[in-house]
Image (cartoon, rainbow, N blue to C red; front, side, top):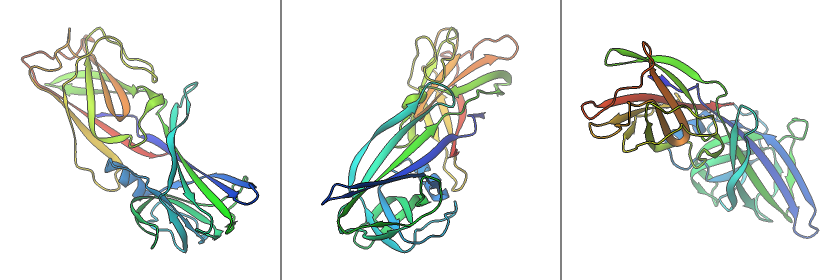
Length: 305
């Protein structure tokens, strides 16, 4: 098993912006959140893991095993904005980000707000029922102290949730055996500034094979040289609470046959990775040709920063 470096790091940030529709006065808060185990499990489903926002007045401190928000004031699926946020491409750890903004209009969710959550699946804004929670946080002031803030009847509240995706800083190295022959590998992220936020763990993956002359790129680029595709890539069944998925990459006889054998591969699974292989005894590439089938196994995991 070629194991990627631990996991995709995840960090969420809430921004609450209250705008008085009569005076235009603005109040704004920003604070981090807790990504719940249920949210990490939801990412394995490779569907949308954020569908709306839920507000509550309870003041209990969130824990990773929470599955609900109590004393609900209201919920919203009114998506005002979604898009690519800022990215760090200057120094490791590199990260990119995406944001969702949900709106609560005046007269909705009026009252004291102490908790805010991102929910996934089906959300009923009449009954405030929801399928599950991705993240949960106490409302906090600029110093990180939990507070209660009041949404007035004449205020619009825009809740923006920003999710940052962090790449591992260090290469992962190790050795695998292919048909009884040992190959050393080096694994690292690729195209780190443009990972997909709709889900960095997609249901499927595209894989490219690069020839013996190829070398790994930086964490922000791809392996060098030309490539061929057409491999099949299949995820194993996900087990709740594990926060990883194993990917079996398969090349049949007539695919993946590059000059000198396979030196590097590039994986686009929402998150993007590159791996270089060298025979332990003489540094040659994997000798894939039209007489051989090849399967490589890769594990991709994710968790909180």
